[in-house]
Amino acid sequence: MRETVRGEQLCMDMGRAVTDCIPRPVAQDVWTQVARHGPGQRKGKVSTTNRSIVYRLRPEGGTPFLVLVNGLWVDEGADQPFAGLRALERETACPLRFILAPGAAHHLSLSLYAKAFPEARVCVAAGRIPRTNPTLVALDNVEVYPIDAPPPELAAAGLRVRVLGGLMEGPGARRVAAFTGGGFGCVCDSTEPLMICHLPSGCITSGGHQWWFVAEGRRNAFDMPAPMRFVLRLMGIGIDYMRPGQIVFDPNHNFAIHDRAALQASCSDVLSWDFDTLLDLHAPPDSCPRGNARDLLEPVLAPLAEGRWDEVSWRDGVLPR
Image 1 (cartoon, helix red, strand yellow):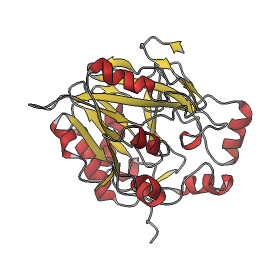
Image 2: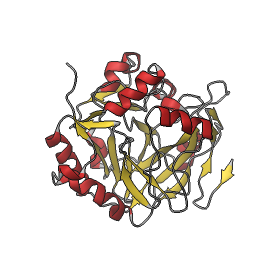
Image 3: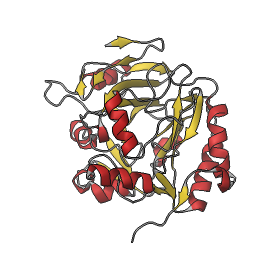
Image 4: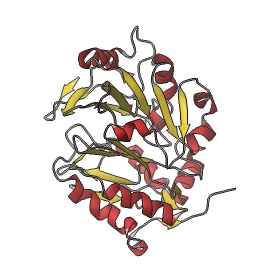
């Protein structure tokens, strides 16, 4: 396990989990756990950083509880594959009560968590997850909520959850899916990634891949050998667009907009939140901007919130019937 300047640690590499790794505090009532994962959180040759986030919510007049966002794949062969998370429950004297999927592509590990924490409510937004993972949503403690109505208990305790409505996979994602036989890519469907903000700490995160942040001094967010970069170029995927110290749209046409009004309303809502720290799910441990997250994210969200569509690289699309 590698210590970093932020106090976080890389606790899993290529799907081999260090299951006794307790999430590290990064802000008041916020903990994270950083890992590496392959396509769709599976083990695989492509590896990128992935992060789980745990929030402690303190409802007024109620009992504090924990919320997990983006449950990382655990070592299923370990004697206690959830030892770190259970240790955090004991340390905080708070039970895990909610588990959230941050986006439609981050749900493959949720059934493991649903079974391990039967008292927790595993909440997924209506959209692709219920359509593509019926086994998950059939579990007793898994709930599907309308994209405009996340569990009200979260907002009441200071956690804002907003689905970015109106997004779908674009031609780039379909090209990758065709190139890989569907093994690394998405079908043309609604994505509905989440934006989540913990108001007490001012931490915000995005659950999709619609834009990327790269810290100063880093060329890109990926760590892969040259042959893999060559394969990505063959699939039409470029990563040279990333700009250190900035948040930028993904220009590879992996996303398209099927409902401009829904996306505009979503982004306007997000910009009304009070935040200053970005916990990017795919940023390395030392690459999350603190204190200036609004300055970085607002230029990306403002064209969407204000309907300045000529400044947005995504195309329009139509959902399949």
